[in-house]
Image (cartoon, rainbow, N blue to C red):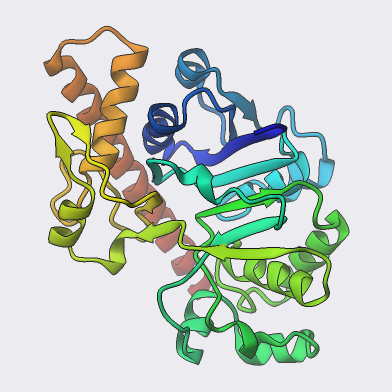
Length: 317
């Protein structure tokens, strides 16, 4: 496929998972170009050296607006729409892996964007909880027919996209509105990216397709996932399912996780370590355990800081 690559957004909290994501890409797709959009200042040399990964960060992003306003939770991935190294791309959150031939859905001849096809219709409560405030949307965007898309609103952790389908000014206008009305959209980009895509499709500005490209781990029982995504002699078993597995939500696929089926991610995290370093089995497991511990500490630290901010807001001097 010409002028195409895969883009992954990550921060220091999920870089450990991004390594597994990249390893799964190399395992199933081969030498397709990969680019990390990095939020933060930490070393990515291991991925760059091992898999030839490109990096976009605050130091080399071209747009001043994106540098100043589009790094952080849920916003980092938006940079791909203007600064992707390729015209067409597959975007992936760091807490995903590729499972077999996901590129069979990359139908850019007929579509500019291909998003996931949800398994169920979204009731009003879900739309308000995970996408946007319905009354607010009706107030600020009265022409947007949000009801017509309740079958289509999707988790934005994986999608095929095309560079420059949106004007940067449109994005800035939405960011400005969010700064005035922070509860209009679900935190992060999920709400307003769904809005931008479906509004553009309604206006005839983009060709929007939907396919079953993403599996959301919290939607399924562990025993079901173990059967569908199993291994034989340390190799993944193909069962007529080409998909992106996404560990969305708070339970991340650390190597010692008991509350979530993490074996596919652990397999590819191990694959990265094997590709990047010379390790014994014990050293490999130690590397993963240390990364898991760092992730847990980082998450607890951020939760603590958020609580402190909330307390400070409530205290009146």
